[in-house]
Image (cartoon, one colour):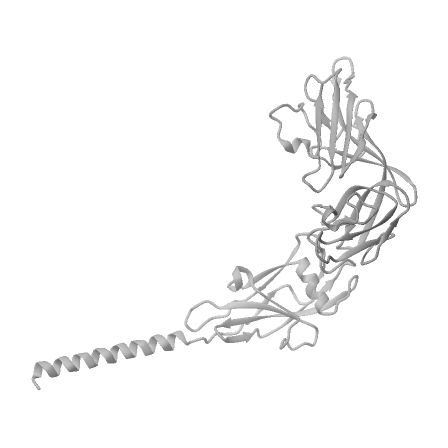
Length: 381
């Protein structure tokens, strides 16, 4: 064998050896899943007390020190919750940290925490303790933090799971017994479902969907409960509110509705219920109040009510703005016509008639249903 051939063979074996060594190093590096534990839990503090408000956007923030991977790669985190005395071998709940598990922090909503407390056996309207810790992982290697912490949870008296939708159905309702025609309730910013509706003599209940086999609810006095049926004795108009977070219910009868003119300090035209949370009126006379040097053109809407005990009351609905300085015109945004509950002040949270409406008549439509934002329309002629 010539020297050149021997050199070539040696070179090939050397190259293969180097490649083998490199591949071995890469494999060893790839398989290195060694990580440290989480050394410290920062927040919440030991024994921190939380009064849960599941219907809000409130969150509880958890923070801890970072674990380290020997190869410098990312470490993943889960926060685990268990009952007091539990060993976290079967935690009642685990959840990945922020950033899909890569951040050493977690923002957990009150709604989820309320569900965790329920799984841990803490009953509604009571307080109880949970313990939590952090599990760091890389590949199949998991390490629990060096410590655990407890938090104290006060649960509201309401339901653990708040439905995404609520409908009213039954032979007393506007949609009748056909579940697919059940009328939707509107979810407010405070987490309370609301509907303005007409009930006739018959039965009704509430459902979390208008198809299939829904979870149903009924009103018992001022309480909201799962299951059951309500009996309506006579035809009446109502504003119904269901607060699932606190298992509370309110049914206010609406006995009258009208357009309230601020300067006259009274209702100057009645509104008639037209179904599906809508009131209408045609040809209401529009007359600005003449103060001599100027005329006032402000108005809002007034509802006469009666509570469950028959006590009379008044509700006002008006503008989101405390003051509207100019009359609406063709360029006025839709938000101007939005309607919200307002106080009983004579002048505040009122609207203005369109320019040139004085001495004319107006057709009003008031929409208070789940099809969109509560709003009104006014056509002057």
